[in-house]
Amino acid sequence: MVDENETFFRDACAAFNARTLCDETAQYVARGRVYRDLPEDELSLIYVFGMREWDRIGHPRPQFFADAEGEYQVRGIKPPYNEVRAERERLFARAEAALRGMSDEDQDAFVTEIAETYAAEASRPN
Image (cartoon, rainbow, N blue to C red; front, side, top):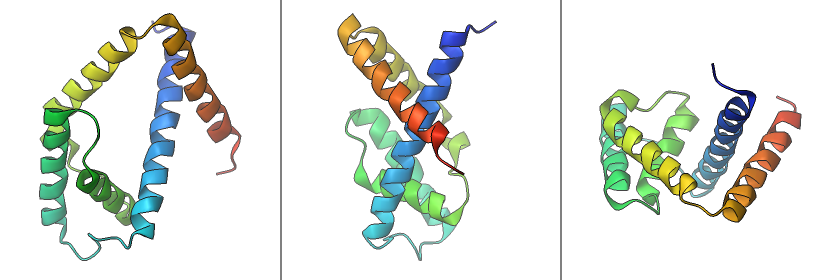
């Protein structure tokens, strides 16, 4: 059974990621939706290549990948997650390892930021 802290942390991380994706999608739209007219199969190629590049280089996430993800959001369709399952798992594992490697003070600051984001998102009307 997952304890309450683990559940809260997962929910808070999901809220943090959703807020980041929302912000990045808004920035993508403000820049003019460069992938607007791209067929879905070509958008998929960009997304997959971008995820693989992000997995290869680590941080920061490639802008063209963030833009492809934003275009998926605007279109209301899911990216081809099944094609990048291994890359996603490695990225999540590295993020978890990085979190575990933080000092207690840095972990507290990170969790506080996530908690504040989660609280702000939870209080927003849908």
